[in-house]
Length: 92
Ligand SMILES: C[C@H](O)[C@H](O)[C@H]1CNC2=NC(N)=NC(=O)C2=N1
Image (cartoon, rainbow, N blue to C red):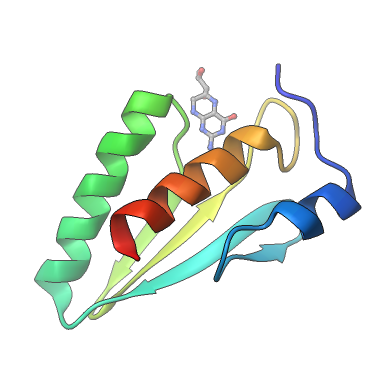
């Protein structure tokens, strides 16, 4: 099981545009419409499957909110930071 990161480690390692919300890290990705947002969600789901680490994702017109946590560790781990960075990589 992945180790929980400390508060300091989370603050230092949080990828660009992500914020911490308790035991989760969160980013809202913005798009020009619903289809673009849905396309991103689909690509993100592919990365999540590859990593076997599955974020909660909410699609709305023009945005996808992504929340990551590691359930078996009960909080934020390296797995969350790694997937957040990969998600930034297919967006930025
Ligand atoms: C059963 C399965 O291995 C677990 O549910 C995996 C898969 N996806 C996961 N996704 C997330 N976000 N956190 C987990 O702890 C996690 N664990």
